Length: 409
Image (tube, rainbow, N blue to C red; front, side, top):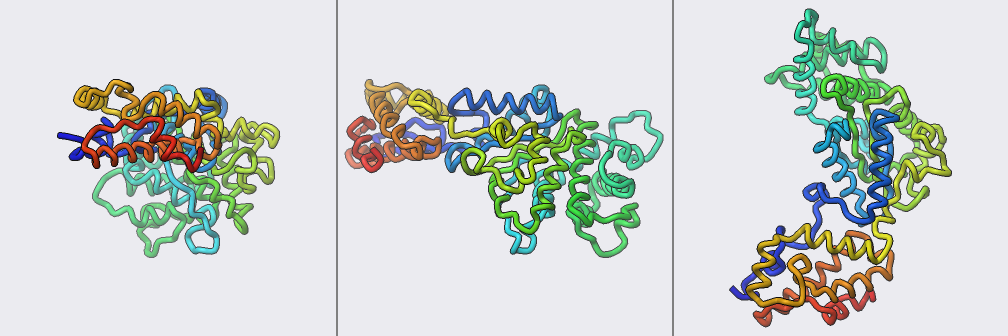
């Protein structure tokens, strides 16, 4: 079979249909400057030691890998729980819009937290907790409530009654339970008959629910909860709910909460990327162990992920080898007698890669991971289309690079 009948995956020896990085599917792999990675993981590890769970963030412009960073942390937390003892849940804060019903205020973010955890997790949490005290003589709810530390006694007992009544066994609809957890007041007396006699009327009540679920998770799984919040820049739209949102984030950041943490990804660079609702007043920052002078220690800036030509070249080499099927790439090279590259750089020559690095490094906007991958895809697509027209293998050389990237060189 000649190039005319090959698709891009076959032609380039890829392990996927096209040049693309999947933030979740490729979460195991982390790219770029090791200094940035070490800085982030140092903060994460320090937070586990000091605060019990991570309470920090990352900032970066579009394409610098914020979402991928969150999924990489999720992979680490899932894969190395002894080192990172927190169960991660990912969600996007955006869109946040106080002018649209249901898209503003803490209840909106609270609902996203609950959705991220989901019914499967809550059921497993209750079932596994139920198995802990082998010599238990009291009812599940009465034992569970002893793990709760936040909110009024009525709230704690109502939460314990609700979890034991609705999430211990399958077969019962949990719709009313979810409505209560979200801060709504279901119609009828079903919940009251289960011992739920208080409603979540304020944002602080909702936070107390999440913090108590964190305490229960700690007891059951010997781990905390960590919410990986993407698109946190949406909190820049907070207006009338400033006090509410700030106070709830402050409540989560307080030292007495060692079981529920967060890593928030924000668009932008430096301190200007941090929404006012987080930094004003500065009491929240102090809970994170920083001030406006060293805020970068709590919110790691990703713009240094690719900080030199060596970083850029290393990223390209790592990316290409990561998306390659080694055996298929070698087979292509042998079949078409390709000698001026290696299997991991196919379909580019080494000099073409050097030229791509030279061009992209000149422009900061072009040397972020997303744009680098996009330009690699552009160049490979040109070589591939020429090969299909001529029905012969065309490798992406310096001439093709110069022609295709002339608009940015």
